[in-house]
Picture 1: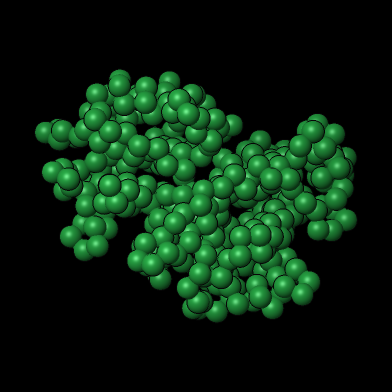
Picture 2: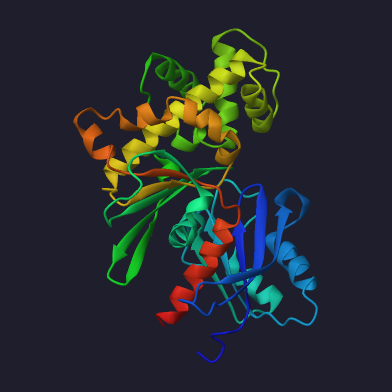
Length: 329
């Protein structure tokens, strides 16, 4: 690899924001260093190529010909990506041609986050439950944002395999009478109620509107951030109840996924708005619902669950994935 030390673009593309940095291979274990980090609002641009072009235009004297995009969605054989959460089509091959790149790779966004999990410093995490240390084993990375992403990091000798999933599209399950009533209400307007219909920013709005309808109240909050702000301030009982339901469903879902994927090494909750509600999450039913899996409670008690505070995790993970991939070629 004659260009192994050259800078490359790394982008984390979400439904609301695109985060970009200029990455360079590091001297120690090739861990990437990040420069010129910026955040863009998707709604302000007609397409991802416009965002990337603006970012590249702010790098005077820099010639960047390679890059990696981390994004949610399902890639097709022609290189396009099926995703319900982006405001415009995503085709890395088209973008590569428009920007004149030699190489522009695509990786699932939570697969990228999983590649960054080992790089997170202890000061950047909040322990929610479980022991400080866990045996080496599969690790789950999950996070609600515009959608819900999840990936499994599986150790394999000196390297690791990361399994990208579409766990957010699996069916939502109810764990108590209130959640069953909410699910019944959501099924009136959806033939399939997925996990991310509840566990995401838009999902929080779905839960809030459903609770309003069930209790005969008129919605007063128009955005997920309004609901969380009102819940954190304890200024609106319905907002508090909505966020409590959200945290309970999150705990139950994370416990289900831990059992489904045989997680032993730990669970990282990353991205989205969870860091903004960290204290609420700690005081909610999240942990109890996570552990409430009958005879499997004892197994789940052995798994550390941590909230990741690092805002650049997706970009760093995408860069790390790209370096690992090129090193293996």
